[in-house]
Length: 503
Image 1 (tube, rainbow, N blue to C red):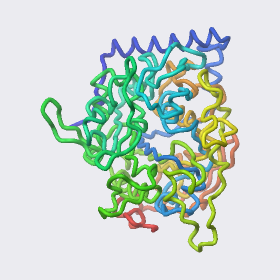
Image 2 (tube, rainbow, N blue to C red):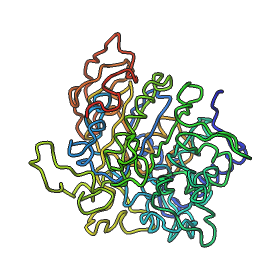
Image 3 (cartoon, rainbow, N blue to C red):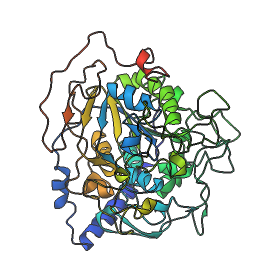
Image 4 (cartoon, rainbow, N blue to C red):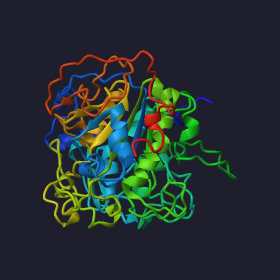
């Protein structure tokens, strides 16, 4: 059956779009900032590069690791740091936008800066207050975490373009009393005093709402048609009053059933968050509960080959594996203690530098609600931002084994997705960029990322072998594309992608 993302009525959707654009433009004017027709076009034209014709994107969001933890070989995650970069590009200067988790998820899909409660992972699931518009497409949020209907997200923008999307949540709904799997995975009614937000995993249910970017916007959670696109990762059989929900594996079988955009949230074990998993870590051993980057590698080993072998990936697909925020000393913080093992020859037996966890990039602004995003996280934060996490992108439009040192953050990512899916209207700048994704001068993914414009398949290559692009605004000189005629793309049959490869 062909997948067509279930839509709201066009009348309501267009009305909501107009309201959001009007509120944003009014707030900008009140702040003395020229919006549509003024600084907006300059912001939209800050980067003239046209992204390639990528048709399908899969975003896998992992948790709480700095670049040095994930991509330098310090931990038991060689599938992520050693095997997969041979198929794509490593962004060594990718940054989170705050601490702790939730504010990063919200920034990534809406361009909203952290507020006091979102950067505290919202212990009480309740509406933001006062919820009135501020400059740059932001919202005044002195407290609360669930944004009003006027706040648009990338998911709403895809709806407006008639592009399908799905958010796949591992373990969501395993314990129905913790979250409603048929209503966007929310923990309850956010009106009034709201409800307690379950921030931790249980042995049966390792899903947490704070890692679900859909659950925090009335523009999504108030409509059953939108929530029908938020599903358990493995799907769910039909029940009384509810149709069956197809999971990722079933959707990948056909390009027609694969969404244009897929957000994938592993559970609190598989996303590297918990050092000791409360439940299954996909190892197949019921007595093995090791978490951290060891568990996230098991998750990636299971799902990346399936995505890469899918018809949708083979026809202009892109996989993006990233982390929400960087996290410092392994031995000091509970959700990272299992990761640090020292290096293979045992000469390195102390925690690595913490500086990567407390820095920002890309002229990140704090927004109207906090002095600094992630302020005083870990008792040592001296700058805004979520630290350097790194990110890995795999596509035929990306040369295998390449590296970019161009700084990007979650706002850059949002702007990149909006550009990739040709969103050109509305937003804070009037050109389709939401919130701080619309700031003048913010750079989306460019030719340093999409560095194989022909889209011709290339052989896997050692990291760095196809070039390292420096952090400049200049387009790098193109290098010869090495094409293997018999290479049809990485699939599950490729030995280097099979579970356990690179271990």
